Image (cartoon, rainbow, N blue to C red; front, side):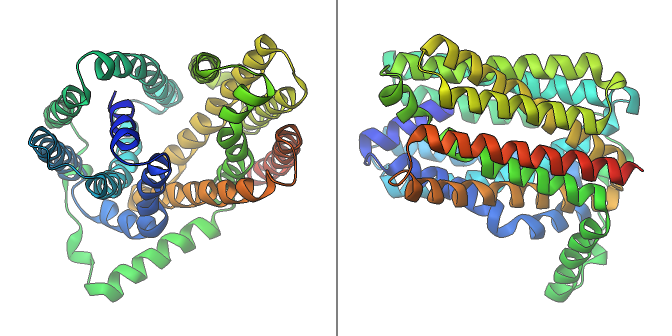
Length: 377
């Protein structure tokens, strides 16, 4: 709901390009501070970090709501808000991934990750619809208040979760000034580079984001110009992708114990490549929706199994740095690919760029499967 309200305020009170600036500012903290935030996550009490992150975001959103109700909210406030929320998202997301393995046994870890990501997809689909209705009938201020309230609710829920004692303890005495933090950042990077399996998975996700970002960036133009549809068709594309991801999470939940890591990643990337290539050659809306559904179906087969492997094999001492570094490298690929797409769309057609993305996914599939298998051998 918040994304709809946030972008609506940005467009109506700012400019057409305001949402793009907001997206860039939201991702900037992940690119700039990922390794350093990872050190903080590894050394400070994770339960307190999660609760504090929720409480601070609730307070900030209440301030934004008050400013808006009194007519003080300006577009530059939204830019600051985007950056701050992106910073706390960088802190919060790795903490959730660290938390899940402490609540379920290893046998059920893949199912728990699938359930978590599947729930996110459901809330994204229905939340966006509800946000559009509320913003259109009542106004975005209601959504701002609701979002602030949900952060308070989440903080309360985390308070009652029974954490592993190791997640409640602080190890901050091990950090000795800036030099100590830099040393720990370097040790985290070294840990990743000396573990071939982790490095392969991080590079695979980064390459995946590089390959699919042009498709995400050009989807509105594809729906309106290539297929000659409107906003309704574009919304159906996002819905098809969400349904595909939801089904993919269900499949992983059911097949996790019977499918190997290389097979899951290879099948997921292959399905995504098929979907993207299908978009390039399809001229029929119904078929294109089916191909985009396939692209969404492959995402959880790669991401869920990757996160599960990292949760199982990375020691708790390094999990914050590993997951934060994964976020940073994967996020960095998005603006790079977007800028390249903006330059190349003047040279190549949308269909040609989709073909390039599909071929890139096929190459990543071959490299990822061969390297993961080599790591397991």
